[in-house]
Length: 362
Image 1 (cartoon, one colour):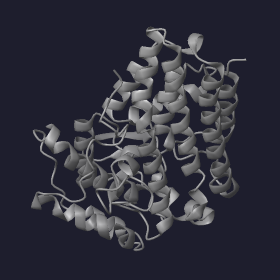
Image 2 (cartoon, rainbow, N blue to C red; image 1 turned 120 degrees about the vertical axis):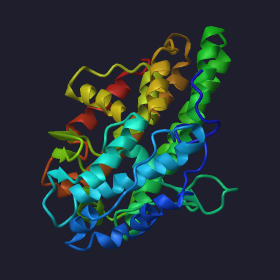
Image 3 (cartoon, helix red, strand yellow; image 1 turned 180 degrees about the vertical axis):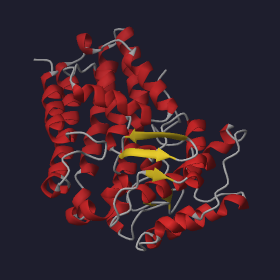
Image 4 (tube, rainbow, N blue to C red; image 1 turned 45 degrees about the horizontal axis):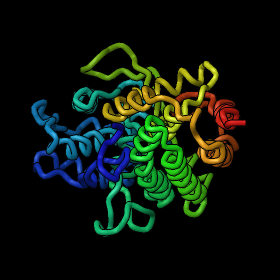
């Protein structure tokens, strides 16, 4: 079975924690809320170096502790990325021990590299205004931001709604696999139609990016904070400089799950190596789930051509919309041709679109 949290897909099983229940961590909530203002001060790094941050207890990793452990990772991840990539300052090459040690310890507990990734920036960074209503634009807001611009809220929240819409995918994968094994063609086609419908709805939400996000503001104001770390020493942890890929939608598990289920063969290149490396930055349960989906047999041989190809066309369209936004929001403003993950993304994105369509049943 591919199931994770019921009805949530790759989002957390419960709405994320928005504040700590333990007073000893309350200062992180305060600093987190003040962060967009603090970053306007050229003395921010000295302020950050003065913070006394309590470490997350190593025995607090039970299921009931995970929500606040993720909040701790989120708050510190934003703080660490702010320190390294503060706008208006040259990138820092040393992360002070008061930030590096507690952050690395928390990341070790979560089994992930020590940098803010897509999970902290989006998957755990939302709250609902009305908990009885859907996880959807208009009913959600962010917990933490780098800047005082709603553009950043919108950028994150579009991804959150896309993740919520993707919750239909996991049970549909299971239904399709069972139908294929049982040679139930009608059930298989129905499952593929559900998958395509989910992806097309995700495409519609991705197209909404320009409604509340200005391309120039994105590139200059908050994109720098989610950039990769290059040759950064984590003081108190390791004197050897580290490189880590920054936050990127390639760390979402949605498209990798679709590629794995549909058995799309991408030409082995530096691109495929990069996409495989992105899994290191996903939550451990997501990585394990992708391995289970990869192990599922292909349904292509018994699938209806129209239903199977509609899934692929929806995927290709999603990638094309993303390609367009990369051109509009990044490439036309770019100085460094690398994306936040440190890659030559434009060439690679076009290759993914072409190879997805090439997998159709002819």
